[in-house]
Image (cartoon, rainbow over all chains, first blue to last red; front, side, top):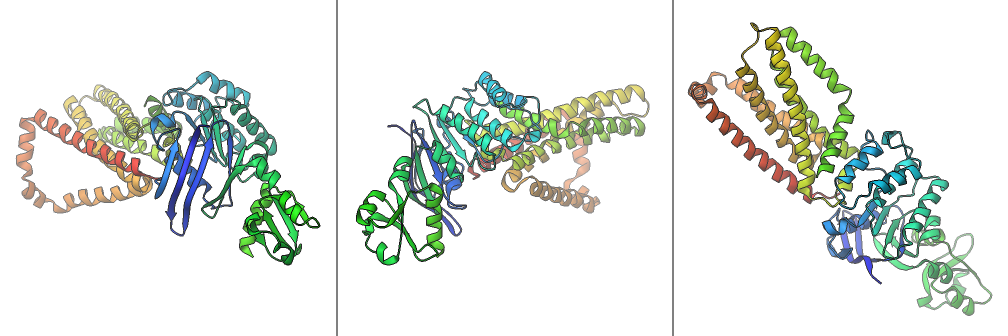
Length: 285
Length: 217
């Protein structure tokens, strides 16, 4: 399967924060959800992929080219956390601007998307709600018929209805199997709904990139005393949390294997939120 | 490229759409009432200075970061800004010329000749262009406000120095010889000034492109 994004050994140092040998791929036909706590390195990774920062080490291939190369950028649509157009402009002006920048710009599609999203073409962007601004950003990303969408916190701060609409647009986009999406988000329920793979960055390191279904079906949380958790083989345990009100717990790679080994112990199914809390919580203790 | 230029002009026009007509009307009144061409010349400098605000708009909305994800080169991004400044200067020149001619028609005895008007506009355009385009590399590097304030101090020190030097400046630069030469061969001086300005603007453009291409967002 073709990789639209391929990152290997990406390193970047900023004072006391470092991206540490990140490996990440976005295959064609898939939505990869990038998760991590605030300041974990999601945005820095995305910036490096898009060529907005120069990595200290590692290699990045964006649509088969180096980040920042014109040919690659023609096939990439980008949505950041908020609109990047001056608030005094209108959607109509944005259409005219981008039609003079992007070779594959489809004015008809842009106007049709704006109508579909309920965006007034003549209204100033500053008078749009945040949800409307995000829809405008999405319309601008889609109107050049990209093969890859890169979204950094595109759904954060939006109400569930708007988020649902935007996620539907993603699913529609991915119907073309040559296309892919890299979606960074704090809202893990969104990723549970649309992502094919989850990549988890924690303190500048990529802990894993796995199929979402595998992750949610196969991984689990074993809740038991420390003595019982000690019976689990080391290779099965991803991270362990000691003590607390509910006793100790361990995040395991294979919930079924854990159940077989400890038939009398509770092995809970996992959500992405719980997994993140588990990693974060285990380090705070 | 045309899209980038449109983006600059739409942004600036949106920012100044109320202010510019008021300033234009005020200058018209001042020129006709006081008989001073100064306001025509100042208008050119002011419009070029206004055009730099395009970079402030970029900073507020994060356009610079987005522009780096578009299939455009650094030279195109910077070039669009330089062109927008030239468009704004051209508007001021046309307005200044029309107002200057009108002033001479209305008040033929009090106003200077047409040579003075157009020569003055040409001279101020060259100086203002160099001052504005010299600001761009610093604005890309340090942000518009810091660059503006920094260069204002530099110009103030430079021109203040000329005033403070007074007669000594005359001795140092042999101003009388210069002025005599200027009167004898104005076109040669104009050509020299244009050539020097173009070289300086070229240097500013190259420096801006280099700074923008290396800038991280």
